[in-house]
Image 1: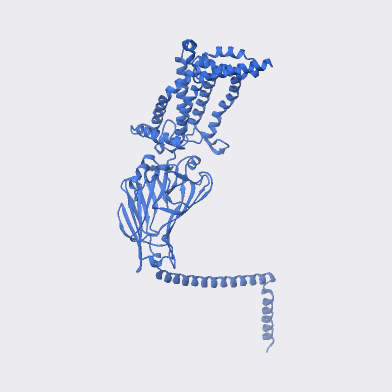
Image 2: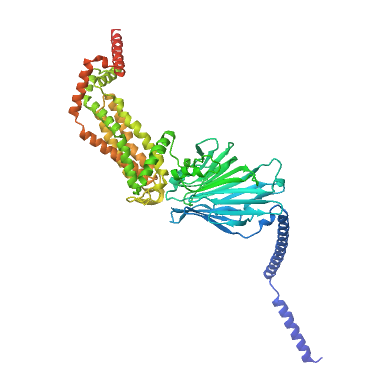
Length: 622
């Protein structure tokens, strides 16, 4: 090997050694490489694990599918959803073969806040499931795809079939109504029933949507309502709080109720073992309450089908009253109880007077504001005789006040206050004045006021009706709106409420002035001063209460008080105090000439007065 070749090998060796030395990775690079290798190994293992899991799941699905085809209706757990509609001039019901149930109820002629048709029952918020407890499985209708065997605008038939048994659901929409009948029947299912199991389970739930502008007001009148089979009245869960109730008595129907609309499930045979719950939803969610009902009914068979009726419609009193004619078992449904008319006394006033008068007025095609105006005028005319009698009683007490002041001067001592009161009452009797007659109009008008308080907020006829500045008499009118909730006031100020409270203040002032002028004693006048503050503060209290109430109710109270104030002013203008006093003097002379006429209350007052005078004289002697 010559010198040049040796030198070449040495240079190559140096290059290789240098490259190996300077090209090796740093310690940090070696650590990072190890970390990447570890991550790669973990990802590889995870991918392998997911692959195995997926294969197992596929095997389980294949096994489950195999098992489904061997159960009673297992083959029907697979399928494609089909929709079919029942409809008439009032409603459109959408049904799905998945579960064989109604999934939507759209009302014609009623709009929500978005000006769309009102949707009462929607699959996104509601569900209905029937469960047949069998020996080897529970048949939950929501899990099955039914075959649609027949479908028209008024009837739909859906069925589950197997080689051993069948189950059918037949729906029939009644012409011109919001009522649909549902018949469930089965064939060949008896051998598969559990021993002593004679009941089908029903699970029904819905989150009712807000339909009106005022959340608080609508929520107050939205309740889960039910009717016992043994009673004519209804009961309901709490309107404001979460509530649960277990009902052991048979139940005829259950209603998921909004303020103006209801979804009602009616049993041809009463439901048993009923469990109900109601939970209020948060404001600004567009939802009012979540209702849930669990119950039992009979097992359907071929010879004894189970029949339900569903009502998806408005809470209009006379319309609901007319649903009795469609009852499948001939019993009165009494769905009109969904329209709350108040406690018994007020309910009778509304049921046998207000509703018929209101319906008669609406037939004329008048604006609802005008209808309420005429209704108020009629009520004022009816109570005018008692109002006039009350005013005349106060006027008589007013013109007699100088004579009563003389009676007070006779008894300056406090211990003689009883004698003074007795002589004042005797004086009233001698002049033919009855202080108690002034209470009669209040006794008559107060029930009417309370009856209207219950009627107006539940009158669906006011819904969406414009009047003056209000675009909907069924909810609040607002002249000022806030972006936030103010304490006690809310997010708006109602003009009709302001007018009502202002007129209430005026009417209270007129009443106090009238009573003050007729006070028969200093003590009574002092008590009246204490009442003045209460009467003046009452309209302010009413503002905080009624600001969220419907414009129709505030409007009615406003014009009612306005007419009362006008009536009081008119009576005062038409009353001649001098002539009235002259008439009272004639009464006094007639009574004095005929003492025997002082019978009854007058005679007892006179006897009490004489006895009190004797006792007082005996006390002074001792």
